[in-house]
Length: 473
Ligand SMILES: Nc1ncnc2c1ncn2[C@@H]1O[C@H](COP(=O)(O)OP(=O)(O)OP(=O)(O)O)[C@@H](O)[C@H]1O
Image (cartoon, rainbow, N blue to C red; front, side, top):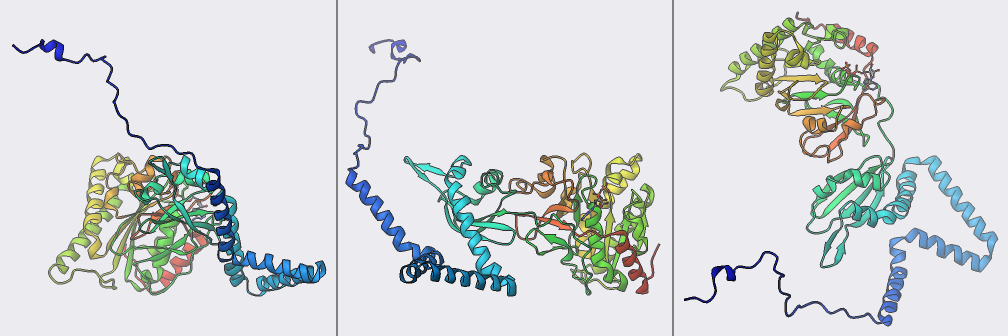
């Protein structure tokens, strides 16, 4: 018989775990004072040797001032400084651009590095959770370089191995607040190499007048307004569909009108047609002469959409087996179907049949219209699925001011808010400001649409008609 019962062999759940007999640990050896002092001396020598390389201008100024003071006294020193300042003022006055890029911005970058980024780097990154610990050592992302543009600071960072740029992208709010900036955006340069961009001022605070119209029209990027970096914001229309979302007063009208304005020369020569649906009768009615078709009631809007579907299908049948892309021409114009407040047709219209037909037509146009030269440019106030379940059929989306943080990802796609697209925080006094994703980059860009006034629209309508275009009704 085996010794002991099964019950005896079982461990009591409360029984203490026996201590290990031998534990291996790293011995702690006290560092002798001489080593500590030697390290400080080495750091000081290294600093003095590297200083002329790291700050050549400052070192040259200090050394030359000291030499002048030593050889001639205070008067020659004051005279030299006066001449140097006069030369700088002359430079700034005669060549402000080169003064800015060669003197002012590099000096500002040094100042910002010293007083903001270098000073707060460790605490901000540790508290934001971007410093890593391994075997009791802390690893901190390293600042490679700080540069300044006219409106932002750019901090180039070498990230800790094992972390990813996404770790920074998900902490942009913490970084922005930590370095006292209104926002922060992360650009990936390469492996372990990112740039953090901190705006110093809002370049989009001032409204933008309607942009000049250029002919011929480039449908791959019509000029809509300005990006935060000061470039022209261009929106592709041919081969895509665009959904603009924003609360009432967010400036959806300025997005629609900026696009139509850029198309005016092509509307004039007949290679582009705009078909407009205007349920509010306020937004688009002013530019009626520009539109090939116009509808302002539920039934007429659905008729217009179904007509666009028929045109699209006729074209697709004609192209089948012969051509795979559409080239705009007066015989086969590029059709832009503009739908203001699309939810009126898809969710709010009392007639169920109108809602169903409108949804079917929009779904058909957005899923099949791209390659045959039909684009839907729609505006919407509420992006929730119950209101607009077709939003994913629009490849390009623009998020103007939104009501809730959760709506940002609904419009711009998952992770957009974490990457800094705070569309819910846009100032109500900045209509036309929003976020877009430009082609080839997951990072949302802040933009402002130009404001097209009623007078501009009247002039555009006159131009469209004076080109001899016949308006279909
Ligand atoms: N890009 C812009 N720049 C400056 N001001 C603008 C801009 N866009 C709109 N505004 C101002 O904001 C007001 C509201 O704009 P708009 O009517 O385009 O908003 P909306 O989003 O279409 O609102 P709704 O859905 O209620 O029609 C305009 O009357 C205009 O004064």
